[in-house]
Figure (cartoon, rainbow, N blue to C red):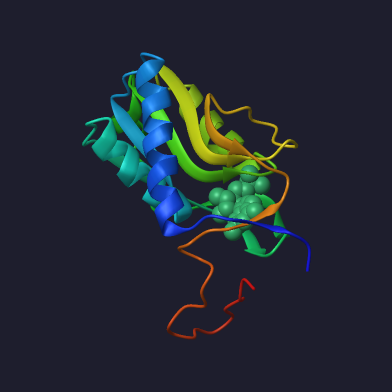
Length: 164
Ligand code: 5GP
């Protein structure tokens, strides 16, 4: 198999802390953090504590069905956040990785007409990403193993696709 980028739980602690520091050093003070489920929830939670932001929102976007297996387009799954909650806010979008960037573009465009400002923070960004994130911990062009999805689920569900 080709080389993978390996994020451990321990390294994630460092990465999320560094990412928060970059946001703070930049002087960006988000009113709310918009996480992209599910991987972005870990990042958003860590950033929320480090930046002292309690207002966390979630968007569900589905795009990947396996290693480098994608749907044609990312799709928003319900519940979709209420735009009233985002109106005129400074929003920090948090996700695990910008790969093609299509997911972040969808979220950015969703926010664009309503919010005061939207910026993106990701642990990893790949060179092909069509969205260039304001805050990136590390650039890579490899497939990344995240600690939350590297192991098979403890339950098996109908239609489930395994990572490894
Ligand atoms: P994009 O829309 O930028 O192509 O992909 C974003 C989403 O796809 C990520 O939030 C993540 O769930 C999944 N993804 C993309 N690249 C990788 C990768 O290298 N490893 C893993 N585990 N997931 C990825």
